[in-house]
Amino acid sequence: MKYNVSLPYPVLGIYDDVYPLLKEGCIQMADPVKTETDYRFNIKLNQGNKDITRLVEEGKALYACEVTCKKTFMRLCFKSATPEFEITLGRKDVNGRIDFQCFIAVTGQLLGYTNKDFHEDYHGFSFDLEAGDLLAVFPLAWWNTNIKFDKLYAAGSFMQIIEAADGIELTWFNLDNDRILIEMPHDLFIQYQRIGNAFPEIIHSSLVHNALVYALSNLSDYKDSGKLWADSLMARMAEPQFSTYDLTDMNQVYRVADMLLKDPYKRMLDSLERIANSQTEEQED
Amino acid sequence: MELQKVFKRSYMEELRRNIHVSDYQGEIFPFEPSKVKSLANVYKPEGLLDRLDPEDDFTSAVEIYKAYSSISPLLASLPDLWVYLAHVDLFSYVQQRWPKVLEDGVDEKYILNHWHENDHFMRTTFAGLWWHTYLTYDESRTNPTELTEVLFKSQDFRTLRFGELGLIRHKPAMMGVLEFLMENPEIMQNAFDARGQYISRYFNLLGGTRPLAFMDKSYFKASLDKVKDKLLAIKSIHDVQNKVIDIE
Image (cartoon, rainbow over all chains, first blue to last red; front, side, top):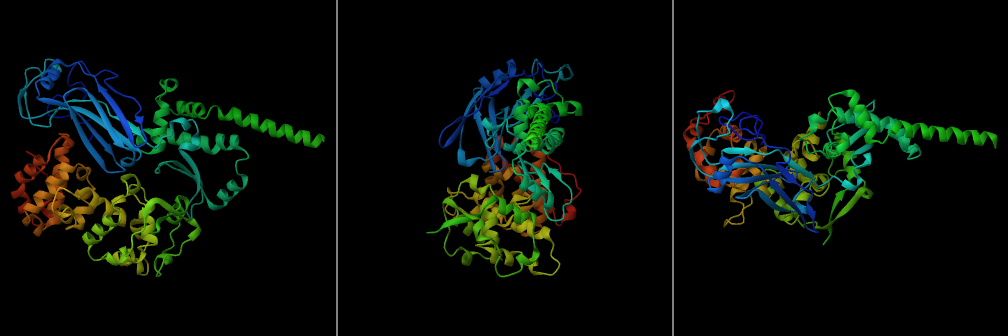
């Protein structure tokens, strides 16, 4: 569920319905502890709204965490009177993106709900709520079982060069799979296979760089897709060195791609120089 | 017992990208035996093909589920097993279940939809049968597939409406909706495609203002009970399509 709609009553965490807004760090979820059979997640929630906290303390509301894994059709809801969840998921019960949507909801009918911190537009109003109605919504947290965090720096962990289907005449980039697919027409693909891994720097600075630019510039459309490539790039973009970059600006997209591939043009030129030098040496011999 | 085989991933992808209609019109699908691998700890069930009925999805679904009841959701979420079964072990069943494949002029999309991984995973023949049984199987019942049978009464409701919603993944919702239909059989007796569409849209609207995963089974039954008269008043799809649904 996406709680980005305007509900018929004020909810902390949606627009500016309730002040002060939830702060950065209002949901904290570290990478899970991995055992042989399970992933163990710890989630800590933090909100300072006194009226909502009182309702939870009085048992009229609960913290909840809805856990979904689209690929394995999992949809669970954990409820707690405290703002912390320990959630254990079997390794074989999940695949790919797992979403954690936390919220606070009332447990039964609540007549005349008011909150001292309502936005001034709601001052003087009260609301009759039913079980399940929301008091607060926290930002979505997620984790992807298929991201190889130790290999995140290698584009190959989320990108692949493959042969396109019959009839495709031009190379294109396919973002609709878990990996970014660089799809080459048959003849080109055979040629690519013949070359093998002889010139990785050239491939990186051309095919891979172009595909990465294309993917980065479309990342916003895929941020909730759960696709491995999108989650991998979002994990990289969350690193401090990328915090100031805006992917709606193409100039910055190119710079981010350069950074992600660790200056591919320099590596390409170094490689070409090495090739040129070796050719010169051969001629001298 | 023989280990269950599946296609190697790259070969499965190759087949999907290069569908040759004539390959699907013979008695067996021509494939390269060298591009097959065995699954660890999953055994090929004996006699499964004989227990499937191309004219009865419910029977086939329960048989598929029983035959592969021990596989993990992780394995079942991958196309590997389902695609292999459709092409090799259970090829003739899929041909009979989707007989247009034998007609002249059948397009590749038809084959893509029923034999291969596609954008609608639940409509892929065996993935849909297995997952819809898995999601509705309830061991606490004397007959654990009682709710599965309700879901399979309407292909439209199962593959386009309720069975496609995130709601069916929430067990209390699944149980509430299907139990309500089982206890009120008159709703399914007439114009159920249209009534099923109403039910899906109704819960979609409710889910827009309330986290349905927070709610228990009784909420879903009570919600349907509230609109029972409206459901029974639906006589055709024209009573639902392009009509506003009131959730008050």
